[in-house]
Amino acid sequence: MVIVMKNNAAPEQVRKVVEWIESVGYKAHLSQGVERTLIGAIGDGRGKEQIQAMVCLPGVEKVVPILKPYKLASREFKPTDTVVRVGGLEIGGPRLIVMAGPCTVESEEQLMESAYVVKKGGAHILRGGAFKPRTSPYSFQGMEEEGLRLLKKAGERTGMPVVTEVMNTTEVDLVEEYSDILQIGARNVQNFALLKKVGQARKPVLLKRGMMTTLEELLMSAEYVLSAGNTRVILCERGIRTFETATRNTLDLSAVVVLKECSHLPVIVDPSHATGHWKYVTPLARAAVAVGADGLLIEVHPEPEKAICDGIQSLRPEKFYQLMDDVSLLERTLRKEVQKLP
Ligand code: PEP
Ligand code: MN
Image 1: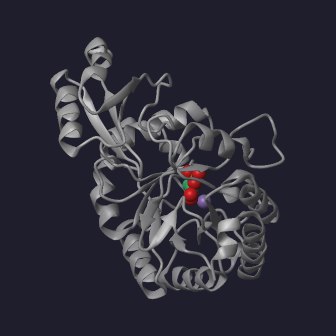
Image 2: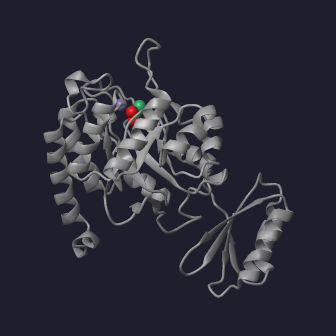
């Protein structure tokens, strides 16, 4: 249920409404818009009548039920776009944000070179895995804490925030200490214990769609993070499994428009894991920008033929520079706001 306050509602009236919500055993979540305050009342449905009766309280304009199973992630709860701020960047703002780097941190040299390459190309955020979810237990599992240390160093050297995956509840504090955005990978999108744990973190969460999750399920996963108190969630479409085998996954570009319609959260696209081949990455990155994605996640490697993981889908530096030229041209053409910027 959303309690819509009148636009001249006093802070005292908002406080009273919050108290009421909590007194019926519901949780109150405030969404302070420019014009008015909305208060989400989230509970198991038992105090429903009392919440509906709150329309009688001073300062309340109306009480609206949220019909979708996800509440805090819904547009009904927050009609305006959420902008996730990280180190001076705005994800979900007027500019396209590019996160780029190798699939996995392999060595200091490889990571530093990758970081300088993506920075030179105009990327905003450095990506790289230190804890890797691998299908085979015999594959390289990541450099773990040493990898996190290198990521932090590379981020600081190049002036980029860092996004990296966390796979386990017991490693959230550690990953949070070294990174700026916590990535929840496709394979953990419904690891509810992990979602609850990153919901308590102070860093934003990049939530990747699972290969078999519907958009509603993805938003329910986002709801776990939001309801635990972390409002900084970024959604990522990274391809889903279909009958098609020509590409590693099938990039569902309609996810971007559907998610943006149903939710206020920023949406980025990862064409690297979606297609699984470097030659498809740039065309689909262009398509993602055209469809309105707030950002891109791109795998880049200085020497893809030597990559330990996902070399086939990694762009070599010149290809990445070309991608950045293409998408920035598109961005300027498509987004009027950007044309106003210097
Ligand atoms: C990754 O970003 O390196 C990764 C493993 O992605 P996904 O979880 O989408 O497969
Ligand atoms: Mn990868």
